[in-house]
Length: 619
Image (cartoon, rainbow, N blue to C red):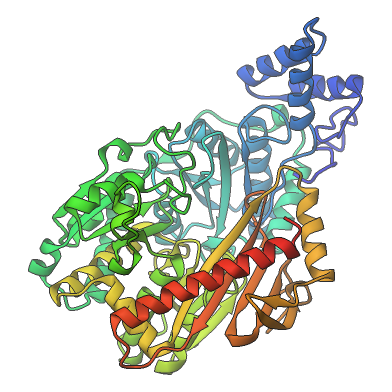
């Protein structure tokens, strides 16, 4: 829903997004929302908070007013990422009323594309977060009442299974209820389009403009949630065969990739896995076992879904400490650690790297040398494999576009994949941030983004897929182990061929969203003149459109010695993110020790760049 817009133009009393500051106006908005809400528990909670605004206890009164003002400060925005926010009643939160109008708007949009009387086929999936199954059922009830064919996944399942089902079942749309790696209090609503609605290379991918704006307009015109038609039956709950078909597709991918590893090499690899209390654990175990990996040890405490995510502060593998339990288990039992985020669309990898050990203070797996590979490092390893297969003529253009085959990475990711592609004479495309852009690249064979996302089988899943990625990582690790090597040795090979590309990120979370735009404005008007002592040669404003990319909010700083910084607001969290990269030349015959020293020096340089950026951004 768009902020400040009534959901019912025929009922001037219904105005959920009023940004009321005066208490009487706020309470009027709360009363109207209660009148049209569809959930009795949410109604009761809002009524309780409204009553507490007149409490004789100042702390109770102030707390209730603050909560209500926040929940009625606007409306949750629908965009290319769908909806995402904290779960609570009110227009600025994820709840059944908001989901009901979102489903109604989606249904109206599908009808506008396909024509009246033509049923769209929509697949609906959900994860194991609180209220996810309820939101999915609400979506099915509303879309079925609107005359569409709804196929509901049989249980809480990973996002890649939903993305697979959209293409596998030739669906016109898909809805995934998930907040991915967000905190436990959040939930979200992602929309995919395919079938007869999107027929180009983006068939089965997440929405991009102008689809998002047209859906948002339909949501804004949906009317009060309580007035949206719904039915109690009529949709079809799919059987486990959709999961079996997904697993079979991953098996076929593993056989095509192969990496020259036989059953013995695969069985020899020791893998520790964690699903971080999400829905990926059981499916990950299946696809690894199906590919021949039998020595797999999950972190039992994090294996089964738990919406509270009790053992981690944030259920995001990128966050410090998130995979500590897996790394600790791996120190005595594994060659590699593979971690998925809660909806299993991301994949993190940790390995033993002797050059990374500190041996200072209390001894831990990390001090001994275990480290998580950066998303750009995994992207380089998998991308190099894909590029070499393309160069050998093993991969035809996958989508009939006549383009490619090509590999792709986003503008915030390392430039290493482009360098690899050039070396082997393979096409490479740079896209805007997000898999909604990466996955719709014509002729795509492999695409990745530094935030642990990899599209490794776009013919079946036009999105990032942490499960199929895990299998490819395991295959590569098994091949290296059979040769007496590790994934770090494979990274050294990449450096010898292309130079050493080392990346890092500076991420700042804001409570006041206005500070995000202020920070970007400050950078545009007063960019740093130097980064780590080297001059900044050029500043590119991505809002002007650069190198054929559509305009987007972001700034690129290009420094001497091939240093690069990209600064942009996050699309899903209240953050400003800075993506840093330095490049060091590497001799073709450089030893592992030499490359290890170069990595250490590069990280020190990145630390200096971070300090310069903090000053430039006023942080």
